[in-house]
Image (cartoon, rainbow, N blue to C red):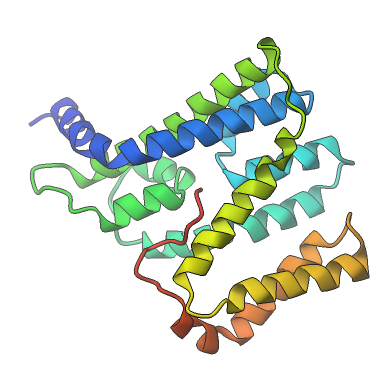
Length: 244
């Protein structure tokens, strides 16, 4: 079997695993594109950012970073805090990404919650090349997000409709993530830690500067209290409820 045949066989095996992601990423991508349009960005911006950043929730937050004063240190800190879980995904995938050749850089770049979940847990048939399978899973998932963002960007800029209140999408998304996470916990320790840390920092630092101190306190508290919190969380899934 030559490389082209291996690639096509892997694509055929990988696509069914990504179909559920297609619906979720498509909808969220369109929402993101419309959201950027509502904030005054051209139709090309959501497409390019999704193509180069591919950060999901980070991309929503990056809209405000792009609209605010230039502060690269804050942008780096926020991005690191939000996407820090990918460090652990990468460590878990070290063995699986061995000997992947030219595919490895893209697999590292395109690693997200959904691609990690599929590539880490999927039972790949012996007749299917592992490298091509993981490559197609990663590429298909990013394609769904990029295409959705592009369609949303076009819709947000060229189709007239009332976008008032669409900026609430981030709040709604994180509320859904919180609810899904609470379902996995026997006791809502992490939610209470997050809520308490946010309120304390909001009062202490104000609405414009509370995000980074809040994340630092949450990470520190969860690290210190890890042995007490972990037994209360259902870790049956390789990742939490969050997308991307």
